[in-house]
Length: 274
Image (cartoon, rainbow, N blue to C red; front, side, top):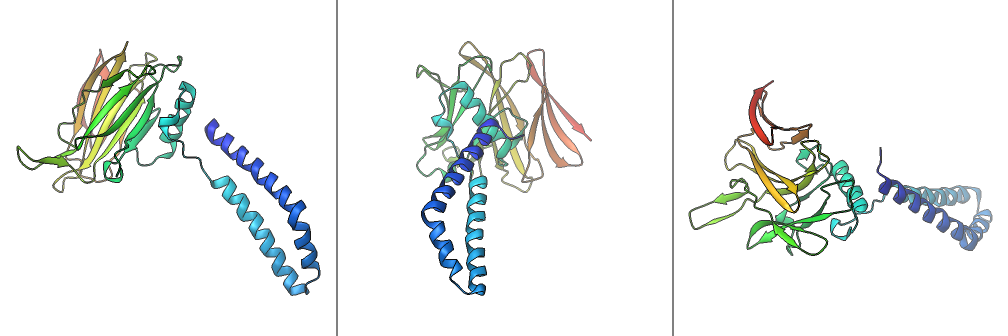
């Protein structure tokens, strides 16, 4: 089911298309048609096909074009919710599936270090939206939460160096293929979305990806975080999943997968084989 924003875009573009078509018809198409009538039969058919092909192409471009709305420009809870749902539904690059909204960030393609911003909605029933940004601060990631009064909180995340290549005690840098994610999901079903920040990077050996997930529980301006780390995943396109009160990360080896269940106020780790 397409979201309301996408449907509005399609109807808007259809309206513009038919309006332009009507103007073209009255201003130039009639003259072109009279010119075609005076041509030999073979050339008439060619010209007709050209005109019809142009019209069909205009229609296809109208329906297929998509608006790419930056999260930073969204100022209300409703717009933020629509954006989050649209990103989660359409972005295959999210390495955690099942989120109620999310964005990803690749530092290696962010030449000007603008970062990315996600509109986090703790309570969907309220109009309060917090904007969570990820960017590089002195060559390493920072996650900062900003409220409507420009108050800022820096999240105390811990990825256990999944995103960092440690060369020596004095030298360390980001892995070249690292990607970060910000999203939201309600694990404890209390009506308040938890904030998720995560990273994925290829391991330094042949063992595949490594994924680190931090879940932050939000209450009255305070974030309490928990950490989930999955290493030696034996594949390079690993996808985690959130479902119910559970986080699942397949290991891609003999049917083994990591699982964290939320209960009694915290996450508990299990390892299973299919």
